[in-house]
Length: 249
Ligand code: IPE
Ligand code: IPE
Ligand code: MG
Image 1 (cartoon, rainbow, N blue to C red):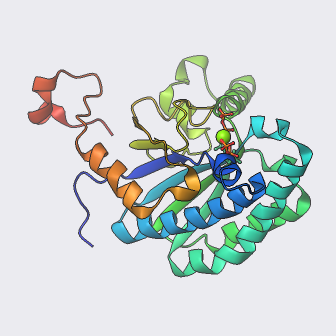
Image 2 (image 1 turned 135 degrees about the vertical axis):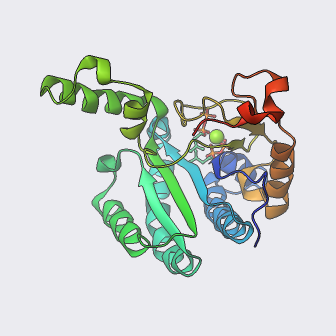
């Protein structure tokens, strides 16, 4: 596949609307989450096929622990099952799976499943898939500050050496470029504490489709919308066609 020049290199998705998808069918919300896993699998395969190299999805926020115990427990079990069921397909699609977020809060069975899946897919290079679970943008930034404060306290760096690159290198997505395209399904137009630092210049796309209904065709529509954006990164429109128009980094 020849890469389309306007294809985003990194897509970030808030997979929202599972509960409403189920409720609309008089099913328990948990059925919506199950269907959400299958939607994710389809989208991951589509991204790999069309040549999107990096995909980051929001699966469970730090705030989602506030949901009823039954739903939280089901989600933990579903993550374990989904990992077990999907790891072979990820492997054969060349997907490198990684989790970002505080995994220490997860049940031991889930932590083990995550570690195994990451290890098993660790050498793949076709698509980097980051699953944000027990993740929050503020948590990530705060943790980065702690790590950098340690460097200062141990006199490994001077305060003046703290810059945006150092901050980025301490975040969960440290080794990746910032997302080019953010997609949120489910109709809400908010970030909900997803990648606060990394979304600084990301194009934001919102759709009313509920996550289980988000299809490859729906992704293609978002990609088409993205292709029409003029990304200025603070420059004037006139500068964009000249040699100054290149985006830094
Ligand atoms: C997103 O779907 C999945 C998680 C947050 C785990 P929701 O469960 O938030 O579905 P809605 O927004 O209630 O429909
Ligand atoms: C955002 O969805 C988190 C995930 C999709 C995992 P929520 O459903 O938790 O977001 P709010 O509560 O509507 O902002
Ligand atoms: Mg929701």
